[in-house]
Structure formats: structure tokens, C-alpha cells
Image (cartoon, rainbow, N blue to C red; front, side):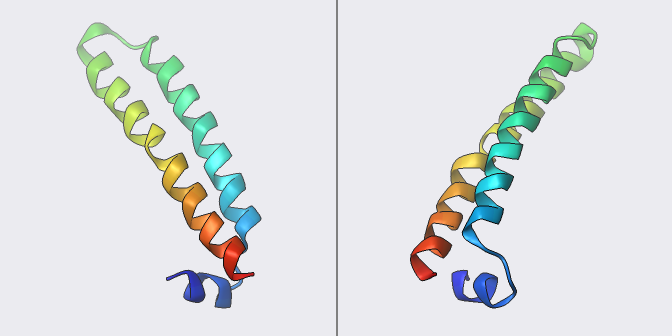
Length: 69
């Protein structure tokens, strides 16, 4: 998988920036979850937590690409 990503032009810093961006998206979604009514709050918080699981995965894929470079 990392070889295909590298061959398609994706570099490690691309994925590291995406990882940091997903942290920001998680924070924005979490803050937004506090502004919705009580009926929708649980779903909004779960969405924020789901996005919060992305950064470590994306960062580790970037690390794999960095070792390949």
C-alpha cells in the first residue's frame, strides 16, 4: 500500500498535514456538538469521536511512507 501511495505522488508530509487537519476537524465537530439540541448531541459527539480516531492511523501511514522515501 505504501509503495502505491508513494508511486502516485503522495508524500509523508501530505499525510502528516492531513493527520493534524483531522485533529482540528475533531475539535470543531466536538465544539459544534455542544451547540446542538439534546436530541442530536449524542450523534454529534459520536461523529467527533469517530473523526478523532483518524489522526494516529493517518500519521502512521505517513511514517511508513517516510521510511520508504
